[in-house]
Amino acid sequence: MSTARPDPRALGTLALTTGRAAAAFVREQRPAGRVDVAATKSSPTDPVTEIDRGTEHLVRSRILADRPHDTILGEEGGETAGEESLSSAGAVRWVVDPIDGTVNFVYGLPHYAVAIAAEVDGVVEAACVIDVASGHEYTAVRGGGAFVRESPSRRAVRLRAVGPSQMSHALVATGFNYVPEIRARQAQAVARMLGDVRDIRRTGSAALDLCALAAGRLDAYVEQGLAPWDIAAGGLIAREAGAVVTGLDGPPDARLVVAAPEAFAQEFIRLVHACGF
Image (cartoon, rainbow, N blue to C red; front, side, top):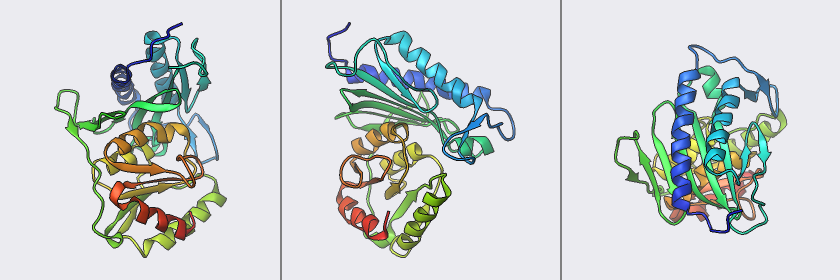
């Protein structure tokens, strides 16, 4: 059993190389047209495909081949404990979303991603999000900044979240739960927000929304019903780009995720509360 604390940069390198292999697998496996749905999760409109499952299997296999003691939490396969106890110092847990934006993937909308994050002692230390269709690679190591590469051969460019000059100019991303009753309440909150911001975007991938915020292509983000694999990788990338990522009364969780550039965050959080999210 290892007693040395893992190097976050090494974890980031493993996340990136594994993410590249997973993204290549998704590209190779996706057929023309719509993708068959193998199962559903939270509701009949929340799909899983065999390619989701195959991608997660690839990610698990590659990570455990390199780090067999680690724990892995994946959207499709749940949590599998490695040989290293999560209660021991320096324990690593990988949080994996094999295809974030599965509905887009099923329909052939080119906006879905592989997201991989590495936690050490419960804190996300390294992450990558790979936009499968564009090939853009978003990476971060805690304390080291967030970066994007347009492809593996291109130079990494540092990301910086940029807020709007005023609330009425804010372009805000959100998403909706697949459970109809929850979706109806979210729609009411978004409707209340529409009068105070420039516009709303619903792209279908939480990980890519958080990366877009980090890159300055969005001004803020709010969503409910997210799981750890939806938040972990994109959340670190947004934070390292200078965004605040928080929840209702603490860390972001299934109840609420709010993200915005630091200078704009408190004003946006107040609006989120006022709108009833």
